[in-house]
Length: 331
Image (cartoon, rainbow, N blue to C red; front, side, top):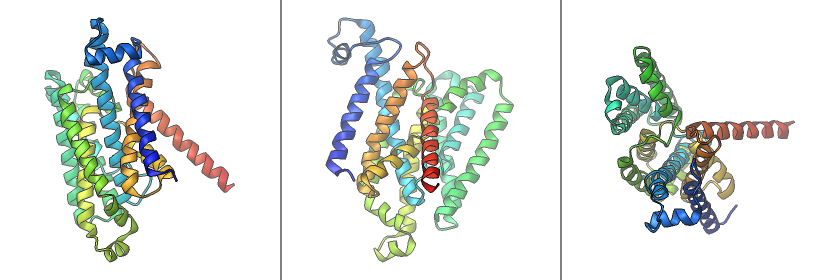
């Protein structure tokens, strides 16, 4: 296992390097020195200054926040569900966001400003979270009942979304498509601070609750011997992680595999202690999404593809590799 201090330092260095690389990469190549000058307001090139300060810097900040938020949520959901393959969308939070976005496009609110898309997505996520919470409550928040509640909720909202799209003009569906794949190119800059506050505060709270998550992961009887209120703890952890997921999904859409891959890899590196695993996963999530976003902006330039395409390709390839590796080890 990697030393806790070394893990923090290594991940911080990787995030800073990925952040700087994201600033200088894109359809217009900008040197690192020019990027720093633009951020400090010392650049004489107004075009480069505008690109860095008004496009790439907020873009990269949102990638960091979103990646960290999804990774932390994934880490917590894997802990309370006692399943290392759970992710932030297992419990149906994303399906509510999709429903909210569909409402925004069909109602015409999305054509007014992208701010309404974010608001509708966030409210939809909260609605799906509430439904899963109420359904799980009847089974005392057991892991199986929570997963089943998430699946039921996802199917309900998916059916509603398909009905809305079936009755909508083709132009509205095409406009919603990029958001549904997952993109960092269309978020409203006014939401950066809002999402940052929720993700940072939520991540700090969940990191401080690492020992509680460790206890919950042990199972009912063992946790009770430690004096842990299992049901109350799971309620709190579920709602906090769902709020983080709702905030990130509402601005960037459905970006898959970030909350699944990063905690899974970090668990192999730093161990299963959530006191260490959660903050390290946050750094890893920020690094992973920053890297994927940079690839999305540079692989096919001048065309920019949705970052969700890159995360899905990398994530799918990663788990195919794990599957083949496991099959070979068994053979």
